[in-house]
Image 1 (cartoon, helix red, strand yellow):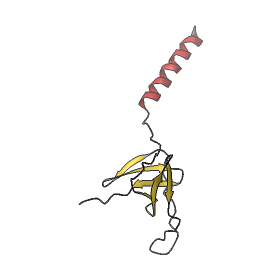
Image 2 (spheres, rainbow, N blue to C red):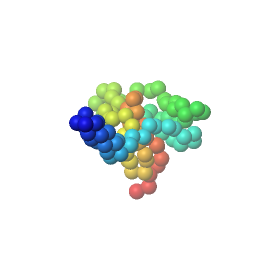
Image 3 (tube, one colour):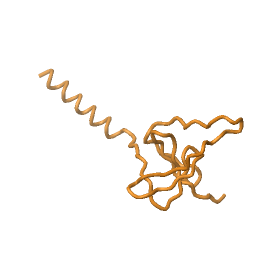
Image 4 (tube, rainbow, N blue to C red):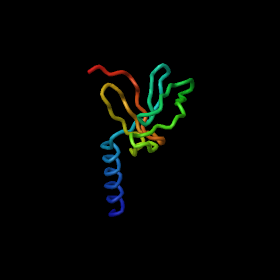
Length: 100
């Protein structure tokens, strides 16, 4: 009986944790929407959810190559009027001109 009670408590705990966890959103591009990768490379979406970006290296003000941002894959946030996603490659954001 003790084994059954412990199993029930464990199942209830797991269900509770799963329902309270913040859902993560994987990035899927939309054709026609402008994107920017790691605040640097311009990108656009082609068929089959493939994002194509420029290949130039972006430099910071002290001429070092800008590294991808560290973030948890699946994290989503807003930057002004743009939506950003964290991917395995760093950040991908829509690249709309935002009005003040």
